Image (cartoon, rainbow, N blue to C red):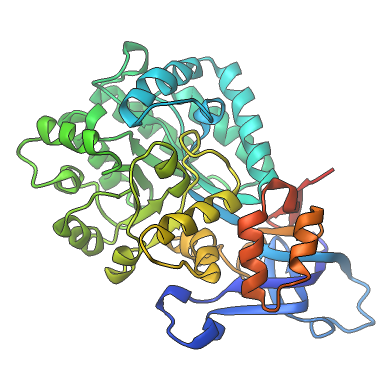
Length: 436
């Protein structure tokens, strides 16, 4: 692959602004108003100001200009259900009724490989159109759903994580497996896909309400046999859900203890939502090195509650943003960041735009234990990035004329941006989306 030199404005995070007290958080990011990004063999070689990375006689490097643009690391979505793409905007329910009324009937269709393939293609097209280059993804109970998804990801050489959902009770018959079948099918999928190219597998019990203790034990066996796979599930999203878990698992100390006692909490375990946690649960999340997927759009849409980001930060728990489509209302990371800002405002916390971007890039990478590979423009990392069009709409172009700092510019983009702002998306040094 020929060397590429991308020219345009560049911004990336090099540390967590939420842990930085200095004014302007200048040590946490690098911004080049007129910068260069040097890429070779799918990896970042260097970043710097224009004219500093190659000499004028270099004819081996392809120079790619991005005028009126801002280059950011590719967005990372830490919690999304690809089979729920067509459930977005389903009206009028909270979590448990919403699952029964909308989600389960749609997910039942994914035993058909042709249907799963068609949705996987559309999902990835939409994801790239929104500048997201990595995601932690739920399939359905059907192995076909995971095979279809990973097949499409492999064709695009994307860094993706996904897994077959485990459910053996409190779900329609068409969506149930059993502990041994869940174990066997997941093991087969792990052997086929985990570590293949840029793909990784996630053991995926949907949530404690739909998994028996025996099935959680089977999930733990998989984690013990394959220590570098992921685990993803839901935790403390809804008050009715929490009450139901306490009835199903009366011997557990709390909701998190259901997973913790089963051996599912450790590094590379990602728990979505975590809205209504007890102090003991926060402490154990930190002690087990587990991560949290913060899903503000979904939390607002289902009326679930407000995530306490400052509490997670105080416990040094890794947090990444998740769209949680289809309860989340958009695959756009801008929409998710905008919702994150608003949920914190409702708790009298002003979420700094640089920290918001951190949660969608380097912080999200850290929550997935991928910060050595993606998340910013550090030399040696994989060249996943998005090119934002700063003239995408008349309103955005006019608003940006009035910003004086990169932080102000970023906040305006978070508030006003959507898929129209994404001009190009690049994965492993190759352009995989361009807005027509």
